[in-house]
Image (cartoon, rainbow, N blue to C red; front, side, top):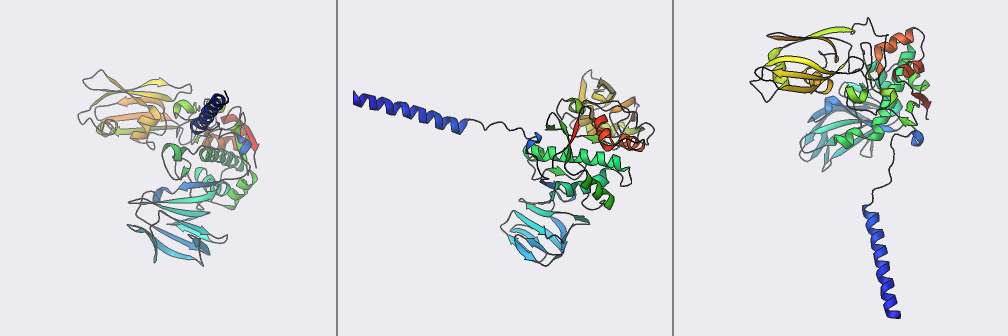
Length: 400
């Protein structure tokens, strides 16, 4: 009796312990909403990929003033050529062997220069088998001082610049917390320094006025139901912004990103435009695997509430098949986002040798219209009022 009971007890305990162990090993971690604002209490450090130095074999770097390189203090780092080598990384006369990275940290009064540009923060040189990638590590508020003057004119009305800075801060924090580029693209940084994220020039366009406005708006973000929003913006909306989740295929389906009428950008130099392409050029770009492709017709097959094209259909000669392209992510970006300035098209002309598109606006058309923000500020609207117009229902809140 006692022996049988003991065996049963041991067996039951084994099952319970085993089940607990299995659960602890296989159960997913508790869900954590990275975009709720409760955990945000300070400006994070973020990593920005320097586009000119992504996947390169050489670069030039210097630090005017004291710095540490891989923990070794130096009075300064003279202008040095950095090269990828089979053994590691060569920087001037220094050889870093059997390393995948070199970390340069200027002291408070040190000035970091990468190529022609000066940067706040630190430099991370990452090495793979064949190339190097240079990444600027910088705190969010210093980063914004390098964004505001690149995304807007430094001479813009201060209230327009405040709106831009708060939108840029919100966008950057969203990307850093979501780790979008790291998770989805496998990149070793949080943001590009160009239009793929936000245009960032280091200290190139940083002025006393910009620095003052960044300091005045420090820690201010756009919030929807206690969560950060992905604060898209573009140059000129052409009369109406669009739902971000449709025109870009990104962003949450929430009112602040749902689009709104805009009367403020009318008359700007980007409000109306036309772009032309050689038909053969468009055929090669849109159908790279079809050397015999000859375009017969291009038409908008689906339109968004504000008038922007969502889908474009392209029909080839001697075929009834309509090849569908997402207007922004597929058609516009493939042909030329600089020449086809938006997807708010008013007319498409398909000639024997040339394709001409007429349209309005500049940029993807989601979120804040920057030219509209200029005009709103000039008629007396505050930075917060501008944001509340372009992101309906949003709350601007100071988090640190």
